[in-house]
Amino acid sequence: LAKTTQPISMDSYEGQEVNITCSHNNIATNDYITWYQQFPSQGPRFIIQGYKTKVTNEVASLFIPADRKSSTLSLPRVSLSDTAVYYCLVGHYFNKFYFGSGTKLNVKP
Amino acid sequence: DGGITQSPKYLFRKEGQNVTLSCEQNLNHDAMYWYRQDPGQGLRLIYYSQIVNDFQKGDIAEGYSVSREKKESFPLTVTSAQKNPTAFYLCASSISLLPRGAITYNEQFFGPGTRLTVL
Image 1 (tube, chains in turn blue, red):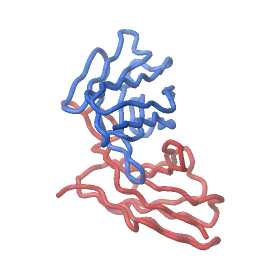
Image 2 (image 1 turned 120 degrees about the horizontal axis):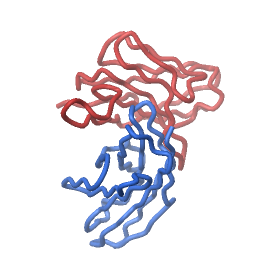
Image 3 (image 1 turned 90 degrees about the vertical axis):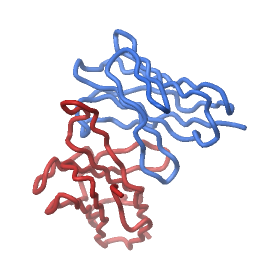
């Protein structure tokens, strides 16, 4: 079970780019890297997923180096509504995803 | 409008009582999951089901039970054997257990949650 290490919290200001790095040293060959966002008292919501290199969608980018032992979620031009907890998950099956404590992002005006 | 629903949103239980949390999905997903979340913590897997009439224990199954008689429904019963049941309970579903299908990514969808408080 590939566990992950993320910063407990981060602060940012509106309009800035935010990069959250996740360490997953024991990632397996067939594991994917997935990021979720969770607002208070709500269920998590999928943000992005990747296996290697770079993945981009309409809300975020995911950078994965060649050794895949870490990954970085990039949120461009954050707003107050991006204040949430962000989880980095590594696994091959959903029932093996490990939800740690995540990174609490606080966006300030 | 497809999605996953949980009811009730808030639930209060007296010690020693069993209580059942509802989870329904109309996404035609085969796999369903129950997670528990304590304040300031991540999610922990209680039970999961790959297909109708089949379910498996997760990391913290003790004191909980589930059934999967219909594809769209996966109710969770919190029994009196669960020592510390006060928590936020989340149900989720996905097309299968695998995040990656033959062509596209299979996303895990979460419900809005049920907050259970034991009085």
